[in-house]
Image (tube, rainbow, N blue to C red; front, side):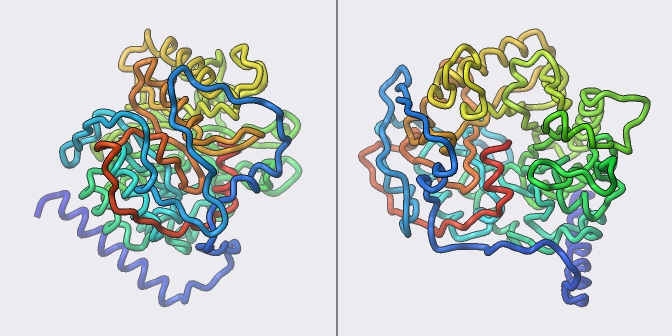
Length: 455
């Protein structure tokens, strides 16, 4: 038996042992209330917008003729990705050789509930008929719960296996590989409610007593603490053994709260007055060195403003530090996350093409002098917020902005896993009409719903 085979065998035995122990305990003990796994409805974007101030703005068209998508899905209707036909020209997209990342990654994000549900087949149908060739899938989200049953000791100790979203994960990943879809494991690092409460010694403390909490009332782990990052690296290695072909780390940073709230935050693991920027750089280097042994790409999600900021934004992320450490940097250049007047644009959320183009131009400029610089693979907005409804037109405008700068890799973010098919180039002639498949849209956890606004 090879070393790799032996490692897999040991992992299987360990996972079986953990599962047996959990069954013997009857999964007793207290843990946060679990939201319903699924609902029969689908996202209602009108309701999503209702909580925000409506702006009387006209969204300008990008400098090309984009397809216009009709009303988004409401009520009991579910997305039927294979039915919508794009007016874009079809392009040949040969699949990458098995085990090799695509030459250009064009991906969508799937939360763990979507990935573990019947809706996965609907999203596979989307990838089968369009340029989409990669799925970014939560392995550990901000709740701290895991998508598959883990044998990592810390995960077992804190109960991260209590809410497994895809117990048949290896079968599902094999399905993606068979369809030529590149599976990417997303692992949230510093925002982990379960780890902070289960390992309070690893958490940010409040100088007034107890755990420090952000504006949403959630605790964070201390990004100065080495063990937080080692835990993430161990989960990444396990994810690769499960079948993921790339690992992507998110929340590689300190909290982004106002000065008043941060004044009560205490970071017990800080040593020698180390800066936040230095701590992030040091720990990302450790992550990279540990993940390198898996042989898969090492990629990082960063704030969109890092492409332009001259400092670390108070969260420890500095573009020039991270670019040489990663295979790809994913700046979250969501137009909705830029304030009025950014880049001289009155209302960036209503100018998706220009906002994304200006942000990525800065990233290209910053990366140019960096040796061994990371590929730029932006996260683009596919959700409606703050008074502007994003349809296929707005989504494609962002993709076009990236492509006009020579960037052919991107990932779309929608916390609910609903994407406008007409925004994508078809793999075959628009005259073809493949058989439609559809699944049920699950209601994501509250934290996932918030992520679309606060990432």
